[in-house]
Length: 161
Ligand code: 4NP
Image (cartoon, rainbow, N blue to C red; front, side, top):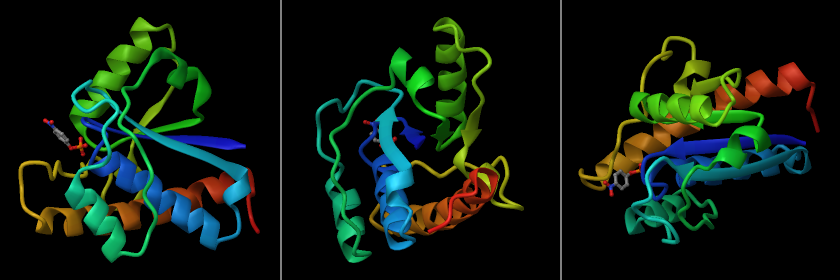
C-alpha cells in the first residue's frame, strides 16, 4: 500500500480537492486498493471544518466525490506517508521545518508540480482570497499534476490494474 498525503495551508481548498481528484483517478484506473490518501493543512485555522463551499462546488461540477474534514499535519504523518506533496513553497518550507523538529530530516517532501515536466518549482496558487474562477484554475493544475505524479509512481512501484 502506497500512502500519499496532500498538504496546503488551510486544508479546505487545494489539498482536499487534490485528494478527491487522486481518489477518483485511482478508482477509475482500477488501482484504488493499492493506495491510501489523505490531506492536511500546515495551519490550525480550519480544523474539523468541511471543505470551502467553492471547493465543494468545484468538485461537484467536475463530478468527483469530496469527503474530508480539515486537520493539521502532525508528527505521525512523516512516518506514516510515503509521499508528502506540498501545494506551494510556504507549505514546503513549513513541512521541512516540521520534519527536522520531529526527527525526520531524511524524509523528502515534494512540491506537487515537480512531477510535471516544465512546471517544476511552480506552486498551486492559493485560491482562498480570490473568486470562483481560481478554483477552476487549481482544478486544472491539480488534474495535470496528479496525472504526472501517478504516472511516476505507477512506473516506480509497478502498479497496474
Ligand atoms: P488552502 O486555502 O490552503 O488551499 O486550503 C486556504 C484556506 C484558508 C486560508 C488560506 C488558504 N486562510 O487563511 O484561512
